[in-house]
Picture (cartoon, helix red, strand yellow):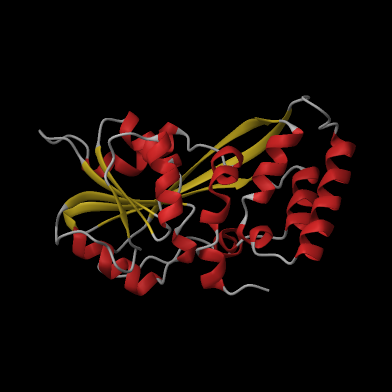
Length: 249
């Protein structure tokens, strides 16, 4: 089994699959994370950390903020530049941000905080945020209240994010205090091909041995046959978007 570090930096080898397989973020969730810093006379300056192919970056741009995208994987940033034009990109991580002190109003992480050392990441984010700035972290999590979605997770194996959030709020440490949370339920229309792309974009499968990957794929295809995800037929995959925010004193 791959190490956490290998899994956290595995996505660049599957950047195209990640882009097509992963869902976008509800604009309401991104707006909610930014609410504590909305209302000034100038545009918000936001760092999207662990930006990947730009799923979260696009939502921040849509809301009118100035964005810088940061990711540890240069291949993911190359994919981001293909989909989001005019956004500066830098290689870096939450624990080592290539930004000056007190330079941004918000730092956001989508599907990424579970890869971060919470003490080091919180301190570094606190360094680059202005006083009153916000740290926002968000995940799109499949809604396992549906039996077939629970089976889907059993076949693919649970993620680090799902394991972390099962224990409650994500660990966010000083200089941040209270953490607020909100969630949104929605569904994503998926075909057999997009369901497979979603599965293949997961770090567990990217780093699996060929034999393990083949076994997982066989299980997925059997499940998709059972739920009627055949050819171009669309099924609705339910999600819960869980967002959290904390303000820097």
